Image (cartoon, rainbow, N blue to C red; front, side, top):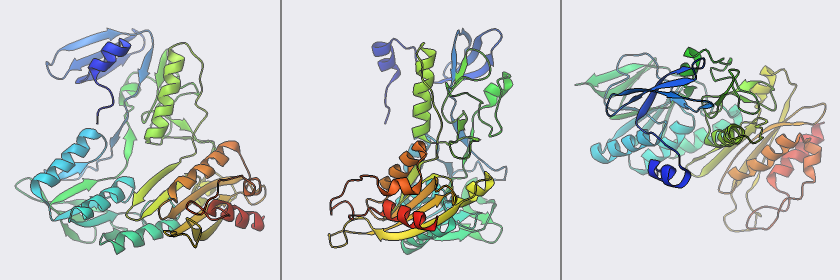
Length: 391
């Protein structure tokens, strides 16, 4: 799906949107951008008064033999998704290997299984979804196994076996897995090299350093999206979250300020969610591990409840984990795994994090109730009660 074409930009907003052009250099002193027309090869230099860098992020690709073979894919944009879909339709693969058990790996596992393809997932960590605590991630691992996905945890990608430059197997440090198709989901890194080469300061995360107005430290230049840092409201540290929600908000703030308005982007709490077969999983704020890394004392409680009133048809399981500061009761984060209706409950926790609420304050939140949607005590509030009881 294309949200808006270059023609629509030109006719409705009088914006000259040049697709199929690659920027090759930024010169902050001369206030120019050099670019190349990828269709004609023509080089050009464009002056600027104000500049927004929104170069996104690129998939992490290990430097191993065979990484560029036919049948090895990454997923990072619309075109790469189309390429995988066309390969499945054209080749009708029997065995797919997914390297990485993050969002991309788990979502692709479900979709390949639904297409009748055998799926193996290779992950070097001891669990799937490293941004969940292990006890919550285990629920997703069990759901994957129940649906026929083979999980190979604590195994590292070593290379590929090829036949006529086409992938035939994935080699880990423990085994060789046959593969007609491979999708790499090893994370992304900010596309900040252009900025770095231009002398624009880069942060410790590898993203472009910006303030709350999305201004870079070089005058007249802004950055937004997956190439730019954000401020984590809990850890108080710079982070890069390659999420469309964050990128859209940052782009809005940058655009308002570039146009002469006033807007700020105060920061993020790392809210994200994914669907894995019949389970929904979501997280926000800090895990217990992340709180420890940030030097924040933390404790956690986990409860099991139902997504709807227990007597109502379709009520499913929901597990809610609350991470909080023992002394103050301040909410630090939360994770939710459950059946239909579980995932979006994470928004209650995300809102509470932005408001700086304690778990005791959350107990009395006036959340909506009706048997088709929730028990009288919403599972999030039950978890908050359990946390408050420990303080």
